[in-house]
Length: 113
Length: 114
Image (tube, rainbow over all chains, first blue to last red; front, side):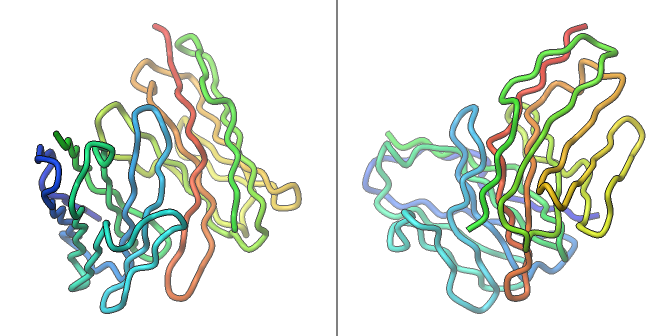
C-alpha cells in the first residue's frame, strides 16, 4: 500500500500564533512531498514542493516566510503556518509521491480565530 | 507552465447512465495523467491513471482515454451508482528533476441521482 498520514486532522488557534502540520508517508519513502491548500468546493492549490534534504520550492504568490516547510526525512515533511491570521483558515492537504503516483494525506482543517 | 482545463464543473446524471469528464492540457512535456476522486471531507484518492504511451485504459466501470495530439484526456464512468457521487480531479504531470509535478484541473462535481 501507500499510506500517508497527516497530523493534526483539525486545529483551532488564535490569531498571531503558529501552527505546525506534519505529513508522514507510513509505508514508503517519498523523495518529494507536496503541500496544497483547498478552499470549499474548489480545486487543490499547490503551495510548495518539498524535496528531502533541500529547500522547498514555493509557488508564485505563496509567502515562504509565512508557510515554512521542512522535509527532514524521506518520510516526514512539516508545514508551519507562522503568525496565523483568519485568512489563513483553510483545509491543508499534503501528498507524497511514490514514483509518478501521488498519495494524499487526510488533510488538516485550520481555523484561526 | 502547464495549464489544465476541466469540464464540466458540475455533472448530474441518473443512476445507470454514463458520465464523461474532459480535460485539456497545454504542455506536451506532460506524460502522466492521473484522475482523483474526492468525497466530501475526505482526501483525494487515485482512481485511474494513464501514461502518454497509452491511448486508453480501463478498470471495471472506469476508463480513461488520452489523445496526445489534441492534448486532451477524458474519464468515462459507466453504469453510474450513487456512491460515484464526488468531486473528480484530473491532473497532468511532467517530470522535473527527480519528481513528477502535477497540475490539477478545477474539478467536476458529479451527482448521481438514484
